[in-house]
Length: 155
Figure 1 (cartoon, rainbow, N blue to C red):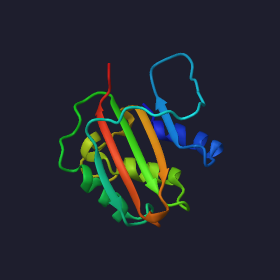
Figure 2: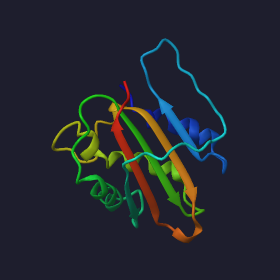
Figure 3: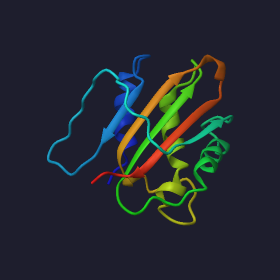
């Protein structure tokens, strides 16, 4: 199955504004596809999370290494669908949409790898429920605080 972030990114890029603070995607086998655009609303925080403050550009390997290190201590999520939420806290000049792909690419300790010898190629097609969120904190400058919650998808 295709990666949810690859579907969401072009739409989020088109809708991009300071009001776009949360993107939710779900994929299921169905005859049709749907899009819902609605105001953000607060939801309960996931129970288990990983948090990392990155200091490298998201375009370079150290960014992915910092994210991977934050999740490396846990076991891979059992086979099947995965629900994933990633919350970014960024400075006001960061384009948070450009953080999605390199962050998800670093989650192979949780998602598994497509091939054992290939870094940065997680089994992200397993993600069936994806939430991506942003908050702005001017004190961060170019640093990014990333909080990740991942678990087996509800059946």
